[in-house]
Amino acid sequence: MAIRGFNLTESSNPALKHEEAFTPISGVETASIQGVVNKTAMLTAIALIGGMIGIWIAKQIALTTGVLIGWSLGTAVVTLILYFMAIANPMRAVALAPAYALIEGAFLGLFTMMIDNYLASSGYVVAGGVALQAFVITLAILMSMLALYYFRILQATPMFTKVVCTLVAGIFIAYLLSFVLYLFGVNMPFITIFSTPTSGSGMWIGLGLNLFILLIASLMLIIDFKIVEDHVKAGSPKRIEWFLGFCLLVTLAWIYMEAVKLSARVAILMGNRD
Image 1 (cartoon, helix red, strand yellow):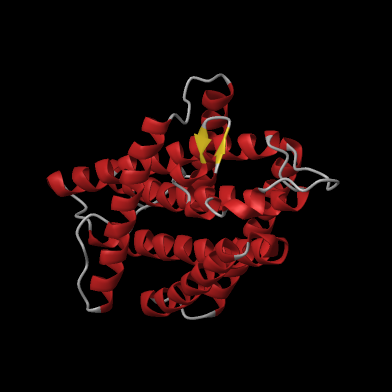
Image 2 (cartoon, rainbow, N blue to C red; image 1 turned 90 degrees about the horizontal axis):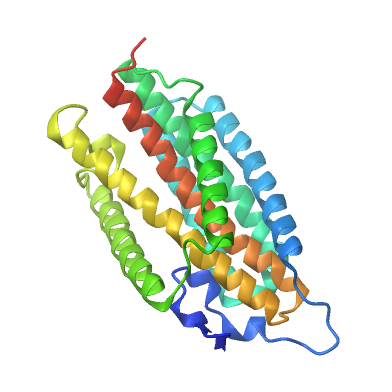
């Protein structure tokens, strides 16, 4: 489906490829930019609540890496299930998006605690805490990408989209391979902070890779903004605002996760110890 020259199937976000859900319906209230913003804000608030729940769970259980990893994997699996359910039927996003936001928030909370524990066990200190720094980075990236898109400094052209799509696919293949290897007790170098050297050239390689992935995740927002804008202009049904908000949250969650890694890597690089 093409909307004003933009091909929906070229999106780097798989959750935005369900064409029939966006078909305008005569007599039905249409989606608006403000509506999408409101839905995204609500989902983000739910994710923050989920994050606090995840942190609370982590504090209630023994703060051991093994237990936290188990809970993190469990929440990650649930979020994947909810993600693909929403893609299969965008109209269900009214119910699925809040559930996804809550569980995704819990996952990110647990993930943040894992990083905090790792740093604490090594004697490193992050000013203000990893969660706060990652949140600030995520918010700064969101505002920056929105400004770049609004002033048309960056545009989701077909070539831009294809390049980002290719890079995103490569990154997620690396993520998947890293996960499979981890199940067999093998850590892929540099993908996670736990498998990256804390000194020497290996530390710089890990930091560079982290920054590169964070950049690609940020560029996905440009494509997401374009698709949201085009579907709003095309008169898509208002109930699709929940689905579009869900799609933006998926990207923001990825940016936050990479921002957590970045904050931790910088703390190690700077040698901030107790």
